[in-house]
Length: 214
Image (cartoon, rainbow, N blue to C red):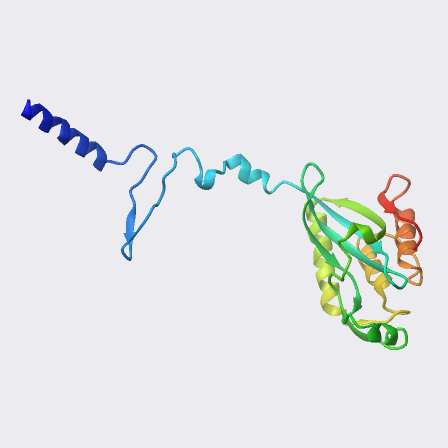
């Protein structure tokens, strides 16, 4: 009886010392036990599947020419990024030309002389409540990368804003022309500029939005 019990204990100790299928033992790093792997060999770590990882790369690319309301005559800019299969935005960025200050002083001076500018997002750009007009264009990945590369170059070389010569309409117009589109005059109000841009290039089925005059 004793010999049988000793034999069973010996088998249990042997089994406990061997790793189960799909597992590896921990190794000691500076005295701490760090698990190398604890999941099945057929399941990727963190519970993600190979199909799930590939789906993360799937998306549709877009650029949206947009205008928004403001206390003055408004602002024109672009939003660009990626959509999932349901049309929900996965990521997005903003580019637009505006004075590099929240103060009204550079804005007023910029109607007479060039003032230092910024070319990123400004307050209210991503808030749909302030959107006055828009025109979205869907792009392939190659087209999107080409457009983004141009936007980055344009941002790098644009340092000043001037209301009658180098304004937000002119900045967006440069982007549109780089894509082969016709552009209206830069002295239109931003809402009217985007509407005109859409009408000149997008046709009656253009993906867009038009808000009330403001």
